[in-house]
Image (tube, rainbow, N blue to C red; front, side):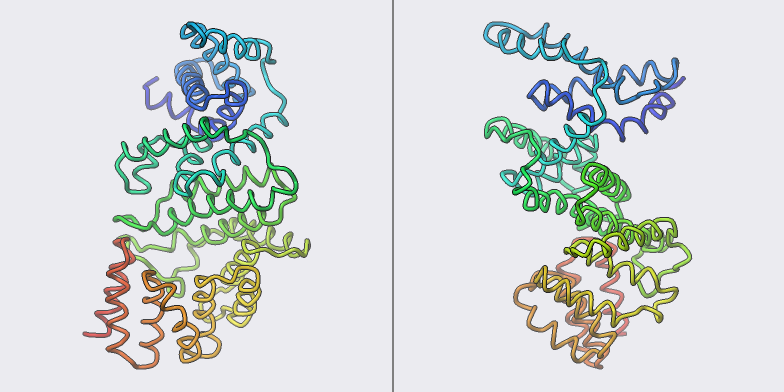
Length: 412
């Protein structure tokens, strides 16, 4: 079997189990680099053996057991001086562990790792990189490509983050019940940022980075399995599914952006929409709406409409009114104004947008939305200028080209 075929056999398990294995080894070893090295060695062994012997009945247990053995071998080789004393303690725990850890322990370890990666002491961009690296198993090169930074720069970020966790002694634990809401919001924000960067890449030629969308949805599912009673976790998963369901219609065959009203809705993923709707209904029954749940409800209304003309904009405005009460941000107000334009017309919407010009002066969508409203009011020259400003602030090629096409349509 060729190396490519061997990797293909192991790949599904790698994506699903990498984060589990690293989280368990990290608890035992107390060192992220050692945990990662051991797990990567275990998967290298799997790539060699599984195509020949078959995938074992419990792949996660096999990987964890093999990684533990590799860690034991490495610690014994490396142990010298004082390090030998430290390693001896670790060795005792490693060698006394059961061959396969209970599923609940694995789940708890993975949840601990999620909260460690998203600790408030780490910078937001570092939280994203660590989450993708340690829980998703993405290589440093893959993460660097996704966020359009040089691989050495991303490697340095990840290395510094690991050092910060070690030196600041960031605890490897699940927050207490009292601290959970605040800490959970950071985790949800990281997953939402990963998805957003995948669905609308902030820079570069590609409009959509499918691997980031897929990984964000997968990690949201993991989080839901670990925290099934947290409404905002359900809300985030619903939101990602309902938006991601439209991915296939978001760009034309040439890669050009297709705005929501013009999308071919037959390309939308009906199964993802149905799952998202079910999660939204579950949230509504619980009666404790939060920002992600309300955003999911808004996307559910969009996905309900068979055509753009059938969109229930009045309901969307009402949901944005609720969202503004729980998350009063300029971005939410801007999105609400788009819905207001469909209900009350462009003039009231423009009146709602104009107070946002100062806080969102460098946000390209503010200018793009304002341009569209001005065009609807017949203020063509002003609209063209706003499209020009929006394009100058947009780093993504597909979205910038879309804005310039809209400008050119106005100016001839």
